[in-house]
Each structure stands twice: as C-alpha cells, then as structure tokens.
Length: 295
Image (cartoon, rainbow, N blue to C red; front, side, top):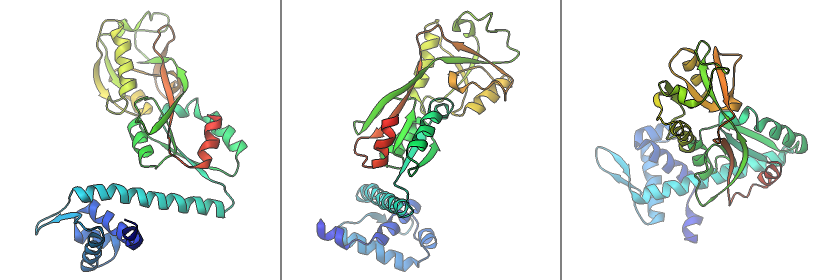
C-alpha cells in the first residue's frame, strides 16, 4: 500500500474524478484540456498501480464499478484534504491564523448566530469565518465530506462520527394572511386551524422539525393538510400572503415589515423548536476549537 501511495500522481486523481463524474472520455478530456488517448493512458496507468479496473467499459458507455465507486470516495476525501491544507497555508502566509467554515439554516441567522459571530470576530481578528446557508440535510453531508467545520441545524439525527450541542430554544409562530379572520385576540388554540391548508418545510429536508409540526396539530386532534412545501422563509411568507395556505415557523423568522402577513406566537404550548450545533469529532481545525468555546 505504501508503494502504491508513493506512485499515484495527484493529477491522476483529478483525471479519474472528472471521468467518474462525466462517464464520457470526450467530455472529460475537454474539461481537462488533454486528448482522449492521454486521458485513457493515465486511467489505465492508475488502474495498473491499483491492481484493478475502476470502470466497466464497452463501445456504448463507461460506468464506475464497485472498486471505482469506493475509490471515488477516497479520491474526493484526498483532494478535499489537500485543498484545505493549501487554504490553511495561504491564510497563515497572509498573516491569518485559520478559518472556520460554518453552515446554517436561515432561521439561525435571525437571532442566535449574529452575536456569536460578532463576539468571535472581536476576539479572534485573525481567523476568517466562511458562512453558507444550507438545509439540515446539506449540512450533514457537508460535515461528512469536511466541506464545513460546524453546522447549525434543526435536527438531532446525526451519525456516531458527529458531536452535537443544543444552543437555542424558541417558540413557534403561526403565519396567517393579514386579512385572515383569526387575530391574536380571537386566537384560542391551533385546533381553530384544522380546516386550513398548510405550507411547511419538506419532511425529507428537516424530519425532526416536520414531525414537531405534526405533533402540534395532533395535540388538537387533526393532521395538517399540506398544500405546499418550501425550505425558504421568504417563499413561505409570500405564499401565505397570496392566500395559498398558512404556516408554522420558528418565532425568530418573524418578518412583518416585508409581507402582508400576521404572526401569532405559540407561547402557551409545550412544543419548542431547537437549534443544534453539530461538528465532526475528528475535525482537527484548531480554529474550530476557539469557535466552540464561544458557542
């Protein structure tokens, strides 16, 4: 194994990954700016070093076999690690001492994250913060492949490779069109909305959050009729504004200035929505440790 790792060229990994993604020698050679014959030679040389074929080939198509699928995962990890190492080197060379890559759901940026980011920036002026809004599902994938260092999500369904901490709890709020007959003064409980159509976050994107909404409705004896789904607060608010349904969202997402909608905070029910910080146990980024101290 040591002799193989010493002989594999990083360029060969790049060629392999592009071919694995396109599954077409012509397209891959165009992307890589080399001839098809040169690409074919490099792939065959890589397969010779590994002692096994990575692709199943015939006159009509090219497909990754099982060995190729497994090797692709490792090649992606290697190239990501090299990229991260070069980025850390570049930051230190420029006088910075690191970077923390942060994924977050939109509602985390409304209330919880801004003061955390501000405090961290004040305390560690030489550490960069890279922010990216992602769904719960996308954050877990990004953590797995080390595209981000830490995620802020509304899900506690993590793998054994991850660590998790609850960082913020808040009430839910009902979202109604501004002309809806139910107001804060006439609202008694969620059961009054049993006949309404609901606009919710998709179950597959946020199963824990989705189940919480179902539980709230079930507590009042009904199952919500779901008319539309969206992962973006502004989209949900626009749909509600146009009479396409009502919604239940984290209270921190309230936005009564930009839409003709009404919010009613559910502050008398036991159900709360929770925000979790999640990171990989084996993450060796020293800047992440400093960020976790503040979180």
